[in-house]
Every structure is written in C-alpha cells, then in structure tokens.
Picture 1 (cartoon, helix red, strand yellow):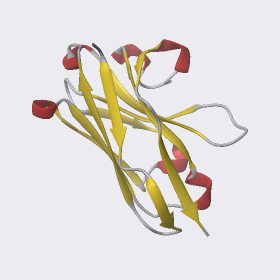
Picture 2 (cartoon, one colour):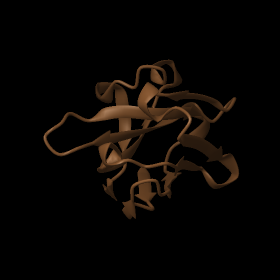
Picture 3 (cartoon, one colour):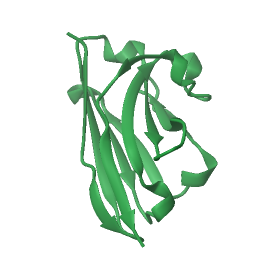
Length: 125
C-alpha cells in the first residue's frame, strides 16, 4: 500500500521553529518529487516547497524562501521540512504529496498522485 506519513506539527510561538517529516512507502521514491502543501482555514491548498530526490533540486514559494528548508534522506525514503522564523501566517494543515518531477516547480494539487494525511501547524502571535 502507498503511504505518506506526515508528522512533526504542533503549536509554536512566532519566531519559533518546527521540523516536519514525511515518510514514504509503497512506491518507487526516486520516480517522484515530494512536495509540501498547506491549507489554512478558509483558503485553498497551496504548494509550499518541493524536492526531487534524484538530484536534490528544490523549489520554494516566495513567502517561505530563506525560512524553510526541504531535504531528503533517500535511504529512509523520508523528506523533511525545517521551518524557521515561523509567523502566524504559516498556520495551516501541512500535507506532503508525491508528484512527477515535471510538476515540482508549479505544484498543482491536481497532479499529486499520492497524499499523506495532514499535520497541523499553529503559530501563535
């Protein structure tokens, strides 16, 4: 069975940090890019960042550049998202998703082949 297990969310004060993990199984990890998406209350789900595990190439949306870092441990089929300098605007449910590498720069949610369950990130002011 395909599984993407996202974990690491929580409650943090503004300026704080969290590290999310996404453990993948049931599919060929190298065949996909892994993206992190988020959905805030009343808003559409949006792509945040992605990584192509084959070459380590990454993408970040402008609002998280310099604050978020995505990385991949291919031996563990796990992708991490280090989030620093968090703001209340980062509050959302965060999801990881697997999609073909050609979509990793645009992160269309309709092109995600596999989704993990979300993990809540709440940043208090």
